[in-house]
Length: 323
Image (tube, rainbow, N blue to C red):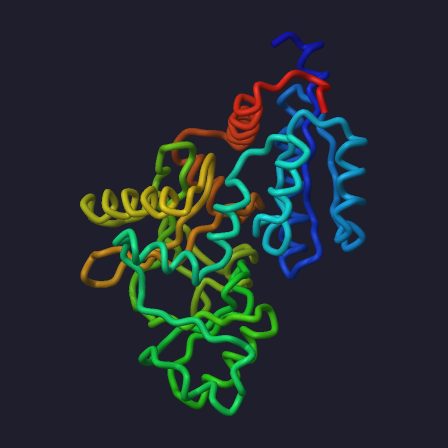
């Protein structure tokens, strides 16, 4: 495409939001804006705030920007749970990443678990607990054996996650999970090596092993430089690596994910990877796992972003300035 035509293509970068992951989205947004500058497209940064809880206001902003495509990097609430995807679909603005239904299913971890079990995708035993359950019955309602992991059923970045080793710790763990969600997911803790598999298109990227310096890969370990070690490609037997990549592709396919996503897994001593969750909007910060896996596959960050936006433009058959 000629330089003049490239400059007419307007790509919006949506970042911010109002959920608990807003600070991470701001970091990711800056990196995406910088990375897309080299594309030759006109890049339009759009910070989404609590004022945009009114969908009509956000729709007016998006229409006024006359965008050919959007790169959404709003993690968590609104940006990753299908709400924003539904708005973009309604405006016929293409975007890289999973659609509204797949985003909603991946964010709602209990729904994901049901689908994984139905498809025979290995995942830890689990149950969901409703915040409306009388607090006096919380401990009695938990049937998953200890140790277990308690977390909000619909948030990311390890917000509200607790590893529970003693029965008396359950109440505080559930209270922490219910601060962020009506539903808490309780799943059996599986000791093992934590890995993640990024998927680009229909291809699994190199597997990354995560070695946190904290008890687990929490918010601090995810985004504080030096608080975790990433080994890419993971030092796993070739058979386990193949299995992990195959399971990651199957998990994303089961939920209907597309373009790019990341699947977190645990590899116990048995060597059978177990799916933890699917992240439909991986972070794009300096410490994020997805860009690191892409680099290991020989894909530089600006090249990765341009490829992702290209997927959206091709899906719509974009012509500059149509929106």
